[in-house]
Amino acid sequence: MDILVDTGVLLRLTIRSDPGHPEARQSIRLLKSRGENLISLTQNAAEFWNVCTRPITARGGFNLSIQETTRRLHLVERLLEIRSDSKPIFEEWKRLVTQHSVRGVQVHDSRLVAAMNILRITHILTFNKRDFERYREITVVSPADVK
Image 1 (cartoon, rainbow, N blue to C red):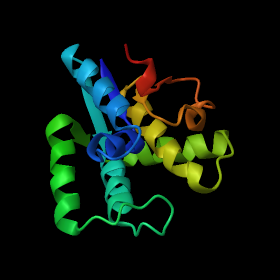
Image 2 (tube, rainbow, N blue to C red):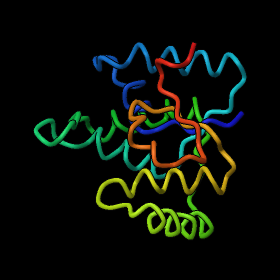
Image 3 (cartoon, rainbow, N blue to C red):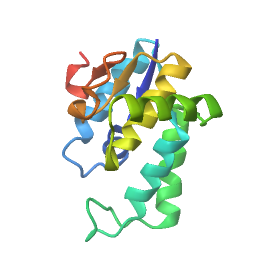
């Protein structure tokens, strides 16, 4: 089965000092051992880069160097398949944000769900289950749910 891995899981997977690291690592390890196909999007890679290079003083930033962020992104690329955006995903995103009256920062999550719909991915692994509750067409799984 294809499972989309959200940015928060990617960050916690690669930042050993993060309290969520053990849970993220264990869930990825278990899913891969079961033969699940783990996927992220180019959007997730951009969000990952943003948080890794953002100053510590700015909302959750890690203030990593470009070189260190590149190294960690390469790790993510070895563990997951990265898929790119497309015109059909954009059209699906517009439909979702209108249908669900999505505003502000939540538009990013809508893009992930749009991609999931177009790419026929039914599950997302995320630490932010509540962010995806409005989308009945997908199954939301937290790392703690993976046993």
